[in-house]
Length: 192
Image (tube, rainbow, N blue to C red; front, side, top):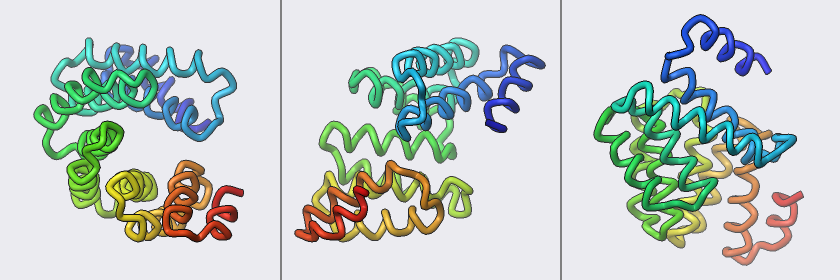
């Protein structure tokens, strides 16, 4: 992909650029979540390695800490480690939207969905015109679903699909939210 090619160019020019390693980890995480990774285990190892390397390069880098935290929670289910890294990310850079967004997701994973939703909504407020707003809405939808606010989850899924109809993660959240509302017909459409 173009993003991967550009990240490789940056890392060739500066192999110690923590942000580039962190974004590369995020690119791999998206591939894994979307089901695009040819080898999920290899992609997971590389994503974790890149995020960990980014943190070693710059231990106070909010983006690097956020990616390492998210991957520990999302891929390894090591929630305590993930949440610690994500809390450090927010403290290191309180204006980093990805730190707040991914922290919100991890809070939802451990049942603290209302708090997670606040974090994810705050992330969107930090970057309201972000080209990845579909991802923000998708993560907010997950928080809403876990918190039992299925109507809000559906609304955020709809906003996500308007911005990017190809982000399959949103359709997963949409399907389960619609089932929770009793709309199995629409849930099947979302699942398809």
